[in-house]
Amino acid sequence: MNSAKVRIISNPVVRLNLCTMRDAKTDSQGVRIAARKITRCLLYEASNNLPLVDKKITTPVATFTTKTVDPDINLIISPILRAGLIFTDEAIDILPQACIRHIGMYRDEKTLKPVWYYNKVPMEAPNPEKFYIYITDPMLATGNSLLEAIKLYADKGIPIENIKVICIIAAPEGIENIQKHYPDIEIITAAVDDHLNEKGYIVPGMGDAGDRIFNT
Ligand code: URA
Image 1 (tube, rainbow, N blue to C red):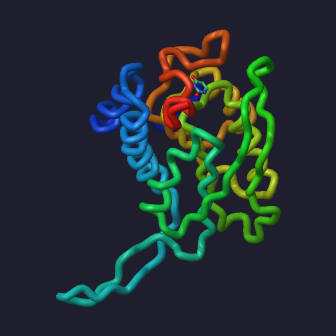
Image 2 (cartoon, helix red, strand yellow):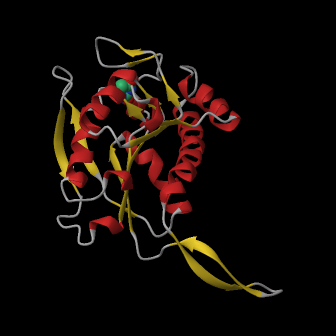
């Protein structure tokens, strides 16, 4: 694993909520609340790569020029359905210029390979260097679904440094799988766990994130 490209965000607020989210005794509402607080912290960190432009502001006291996020970039949040949705409310809250482009893939329980069922990724990316993509999935397990999603954007010529994977819990096997194909992509996560078990679950993980978030 190339640790230089894995940013682990482990401040006390993230740690506190990660414990709540992982705990088998936490109910679905508790999991959602804790997960959202974590996603907010991760998204703040991810936003570090957004280009800034000058902006003139008049406060009640004075007029001055400062920096703000370039309004002309195409900022895309791509949640992988369904668990990746946990990022979307926070993402459009803190980055109002973002659009949400859903990616629907489920994991075939036998092969652990992703199966597509929905794709709202834009067909064209004119000025690809102006595109900034955050692909979200709380669990980076095998990494197979994330790889498919990264490929969709990278194949449109969007620079790999403009594409980020944001997850909450990652398995070393999944990180290695992604880095084998995209060594320069940045992965932002709250934790890197021990391993994947034979069913493809992250250990210790949190169980099935979609089931725990959506109470199924
Ligand atoms: N997906 C989940 O929801 N949990 C895991 O542990 C692995 C994949």
